[in-house]
Length: 157
Image 1 (cartoon, helix red, strand yellow):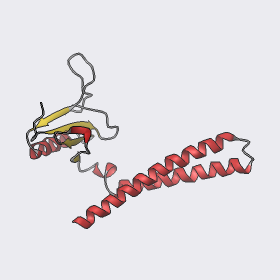
Image 2 (cartoon, one colour; image 1 turned 180 degrees about the vertical axis):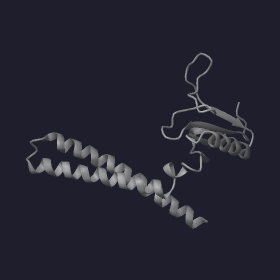
Image 3 (cartoon, helix red, strand yellow; image 1 turned 120 degrees about the vertical axis):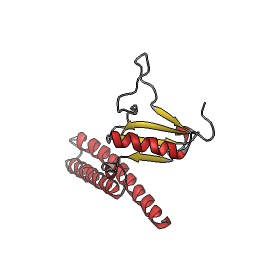
Image 4 (tube, one colour; image 1 turned 90 degrees about the horizontal axis):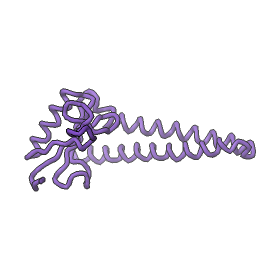
């Protein structure tokens, strides 16, 4: 049972988010069935030390630290190995999200315009174009929100 002062550390593959044990292997219980991969820590500092040790030994992993309410709320911290942190967090990541989104939007508009100029003869261009616009909008939104959060964090410090 998780106490009020306990913290839970979930270990996952940094790239895919798939659960892993602290040695980087897919977590399986004794019957070979997938289960949750988590460590229970008595304090936040213990949880941070555990997460740091896991990510130092296995740079391909990330650790998410939660309080007693678990995944019902956002993680208190997500720990990555320093050399790969920029791939998943920060301005570089936000800019990549924006660029990917802009590329999808450009492709979507191009396909939709080509199809509209041909009187919708090739409906696939319009359909794929709309899907690219939706996907591009999602990436642009995520990138913008991440940049706004980073700017807010910079102002606080």
